[in-house]
Each structure stands twice: as C-alpha cells, then as structure tokens.
Image (cartoon, rainbow, N blue to C red; front, side, top):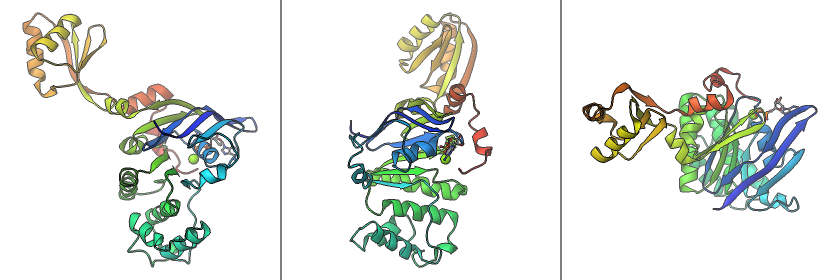
Length: 314
Ligand SMILES: Nc1ncnc2c1ncn2[C@@H]1O[C@H](COP(=O)(O)OP(=O)(O)O)[C@@H](O)[C@H]1O
Ligand SMILES: [Mg+2]
C-alpha cells in the first residue's frame, strides 16, 4: 500500500504545554483521512508540522516515503494546503486572485485558472471581487488555490468552519469529487463528528494532543449499522438455530446471553418465533444501532455533539 504521509512520535511543545504528543498517523494514497478532535486537541499544530510551517519538538515526518529533511521543500510542491484562513486580495476578482497565485507558484499554464474555477464551482463568479464573496465562496477559492499546482495530497484545516449546511454540503461534494475523479489524497480536520463521518474513508481521533485511534473504512461502516439485539436463555442454541434454520451468518455473540443479528432485520418476528418454538427464551429483543458517536464518547469521555456548541475557529 502506497503511503503518502506517516508520522513517527510527532510532538510539539509550547513552553510547558504539550500541544501534540507522540502522534503516529498514517495516510494512504486515495484516502480521505478525517482528523477529528475538539478545539484545542492539537489538529492545527499537527497539520502545521506536516506542512512545514512549524518545526516539531520531537518525532519524524515521512512524506511520500521520505523522512530526510533535506530536499523536503520539493516534496511540499506535491502538497496543497489551507491551514490558515485563506486570505486573498479584496479588490481582485476570483480569476485575478487565482491568476496571481498561479504566477507566484510558477505554474506556466494560464488556462489552469479557468479549469480551477470550474472545478471549485466559481466559473460564474470569475469576475466578482473577493470582497463580495460569501464565506463558502472564499473557502472554495482557498481550495482552488491549494489545487492550482496540481498537488496529489491536499491538507485542509477545518475547511467548513463557519459555513451554513448548504455550503458544507457543497464542500463535501467537491472533496469527494477530488478524491474519486482526480485521485487526490485528502487530509481534512474537523471538530464535528457527523461531518467527518459523512466524508472520510478513515478517521484519526486526536484528544489532548494524543492520537487515540485510527479507524478504517470497514470498521467505520460497522459502527453505523442497525442490528437486532436478543437477550436469550441459551446463546449457543440460539446461534445454532439462526445459522442452520435461517442461514443467518452475520451475527455475533456480544456477551454471554446477548446476540446481535445484523441481517434480515425485517424478519425479526420470524427470528423471535423460531427461537421461542425451539425452546430458547427471549428476555429482550431490541432494534439497536451502533454509532460512532457512542464510540467516540467511550474513547474520549467527551460528548461529540457537545463539540458543535463549542466556539468555532482556532
Ligand atoms: N503558537 C502557540 N503557542 C502556544 N500554545 C499554542 C500555540 N498553538 C497552539 N497552542 C496550544 O496547543 C494546543 C493545541 O492547539 P491547536 O493545535 O490549535 O488545536 P486545534 O487545532 O485542535 O483546535 C492548544 O492548547 C493551544 O492553546
Ligand atoms: Mg485548529
């Protein structure tokens, strides 16, 4: 598997404060890696180290397979980033801002500007001055600038901050397209679980400077499934009946006496009847849902939805 970014014990200390502590994260080619954590968790500091804006106190960064710092600036050309709020010239239009950036980046093809405008959905706004832009348009221009030199790896720090639901949806769709159609690997941070959950193919959870866990796509899917939970008198017998009489394979014994059935949920009445008719008592049958949110709370001790109400930004 092709690894775009790997950090080894990445650490940043500000005075006595450990902003980032021993982070080992891995971003593979083609992933949309969601970097999730509350405000103050250490997301921005981590992304600043990865993009070379801040020097780590300790640890290593492996970019495109290389760890040596010599020649790293050439690797940075293969990345596109928005970490600070994307600034632009207020009195220049969308087209002019992008074209200026193109020349600064030494990209010779002038037609790239039109392509990028199209890509980020700003073609119609090409002659609108930046100062007239909505926040969503500003974010899209920022992403456009990050994409202008055709990077293979895009690093975005909370790109949907301050956007309304419509704007958030548009950015999400844009990022999905970039990943799917242009095969761009994306590392995106957010403090909003639901947002990351809808977009990411992998999630890394950072809390108080530490990366608690990386969850891959399959596990993520598992964490959002409905299931029928059965408290039964005899789990072995119940399992036998499910497998042999109903050909149900997707189930698990969660704990002694508790079965979770993940398939044929619409036939729950039939499942109940089969068990009872064959001498298995059912103390409880409940339709449940695994949620990433519950998991997140167990992991961090913090309510994920409490993250929404926190002050945005930073
Ligand atoms: N330049 C800095 N000087 C001192 N402390 C900082 C600096 N940047 C960040 N911090 C502290 O490091 C911690 C992590 O901050 P940050 O990386 O911005 O978190 P996040 O982006 O997840 O909100 C916070 O406690 C923050 O106050
Ligand atoms: Mg931040």
